[in-house]
Length: 347
Image (cartoon, rainbow, N blue to C red):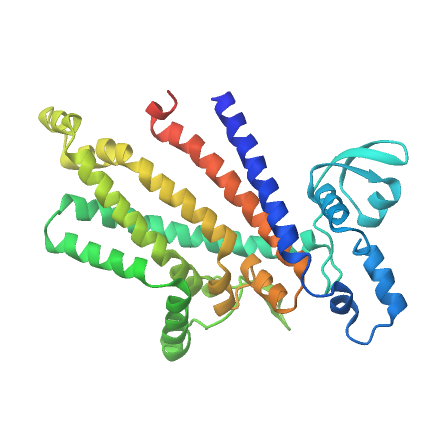
C-alpha cells in the first residue's frame, strides 16, 4: 500500500510539473504587466523598474526557472529574496539559502497583494459551496439510483432515468441563470432568497456575518449534474450486484430485503459511485467558475474570472495551480477510500 501511494504521489508531482509548464507559457506572454500594474500613463523609467522587479527583463528560460523556484516547495533563495517575498519556511545556508517553504505564487498586478492571500480568502467559500453541492448530490442521487434499481421497469425507474438525463443534459451555467431568475427574483418574496450573495456578508450596523440562505441556490445548481450521474451509476451498479450469487444466498438465509440492499448490495456497488463522487467533488472544488460568477458567490471561481477580466495573470496562474493540486490530492484520497470500502482492492 505504501509503495502504491508513493507511486501515486510521484505521478501527481509529475502532473503538477506539467501544469506549471503549461500555465507559465500560456500566460506569461500575454499583455504588458507593467501597463497592468501602473496604467497607461507610466513613464519609461518606472516601467523598467517594474519589469526588473517581475524579472521580465530576463530571457524566457530564466523567467521560467525563477517561477519554478518560486512555486516549488524545495527552492534556493537569497537572503534578500526571502525578506522581500516574505517566504514562509525553513532555510539553511549563508547568503544563498536552501529551504523547504510554502509555494510563493507572487503578487497580484492589480492589488499588489500576495496571490496566496487572495486565494486563501476565497477558498473557504468554494470549499463550502462544493461540499454542500456534493452533499445534495449524494443524499438525492444514491437513494434515487437504488430506488430505480429495486423498482426496475416500473414508472419509478422511468422517472428516475428521465430526471437523470435531464440533469446531465442541462449545463450548469444555464441552470444557474434559470434558478437565479425563478427563485431569486420572480419568487423571491416567497422563497426569501436573493439572486446574488456570498457566505459572508458585511452589514454596516452588524458587521461581518454568515448568510446561509445565499448558499441554497448555487449549491442546488452545482449539485444537479453530479446528482444525475451518481443516480445513473448507482442504478447500473446495483442492477449488476443484485444479480450476483451471494445476494441470492443472503435472501436464502432469510435476511430482510432492506438488509440485503443496504448492507450487502450497496457496499459492493459503491466503487463506481465513489469514483464519480471524488471526481465530481474535485471538479466542483477546482472550477465552479460560472456558477460562482452568476450568483456573485465569492470563491476561487469568481476571483479567477474577475482576474481574467482585469488581466491579473498571477492570480489566474495561482488559481489554476491550487485547483490542480486539490484535484490530485482528492484523487489520491479516493484510492485510499476504495481500499476501505472494498477490501479486494487492497490486494
